[in-house]
Structure formats: structure tokens, C-alpha cells
Length: 193
Image (cartoon, rainbow, N blue to C red):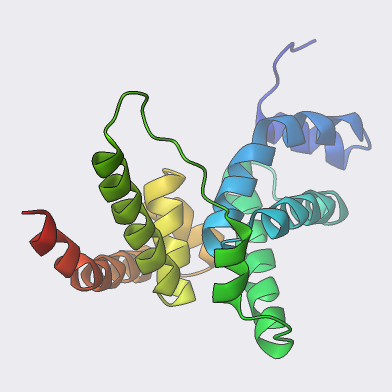
């Protein structure tokens, strides 16, 4: 018996009724899915909940998984849809603004290096915050493509499959995302010179 089966083999087993295969998939993919969803919704608690929902969806939709398809692409497609649906839900039911929620949540950890001066820590934190805010301000289709490409290291073909669009559309989204980020972050570059 294969001691470390691939994702596609685990999906085949899951489709065949071996529910324990889901636990192995979750063990491998829970953190990448949470990280991806967090970068879209910008809230840690929601990312945790959505990641669980993604795996519930993986289980419930296991019959729709095509043999030979790359699991990560299929899984990130589900995650992207779940994140988009949650953002739409928030827009329809704004009990608290998304910006206030994110700011109040303190969802960014201090990952500064020991021994850095307070001023360099502050500048670095300010730059990281500016980049995060600029990415969060991107339109959802641009942000999703950018996060999958830059942070999750998916190829353009994999992103196209996950987002149900052409590779050219992904290329265009990445170009426009980078242009918008460049424009939004230009004042920071001028200050740090």
C-alpha cells in the first residue's frame, strides 16, 4: 500500500468511499487554503471558518472531481468561490464595515526580526500594511488572480482552471493588478528613497 499517496489518489479513494482520505487531504491543504482565503477576506476567524467550509464542500462535491485533474486547482477554485460568496454576503449584510472589522481584528502578526531598531520596524510594518491595504483594495477578480499567482505559486493555466477563465484573462488580470498596485504604492516608494 502506498504510504504517501498523492492528492489525486486520495480523491480517488474518497470518491470510492474511503472517508479517511479526506483527513489526509485536510492535513496537507488546510494551511494553504486558510492562507489563501485570508488574503481574500482579510479576517482570520472568517478564513478559519471558510477553510472548514471548503473541505465540507470537497467532501460533498467529491463525485464532481474529475480523475486526473489537479486537486490543488480544484480545491482553490472551491476556496475562491467560498471567499467570493462570503464577501457578497458581507456587502448585503453590513453589520460592521469590512475595514473596521479588519482593523479591529489585528489580523497581522508582528514578524519583525529581533534586534531591529524601532524605526526600521515601524517603517517595515508601515510598508507591509500599505501593500496589504493596496492588495485588499484591488477588485476581487484581480486580487484573487494575484494571490493565487504570487502567494500560492499556481501557474497561469492552474489559475485559469480555478477561476474558470482563459490563461489570457489571468495574464490580463495580473497585469492590471500590478499596474494598480504600482500606482497605489508609488507614494511609498518616493518616501523611502
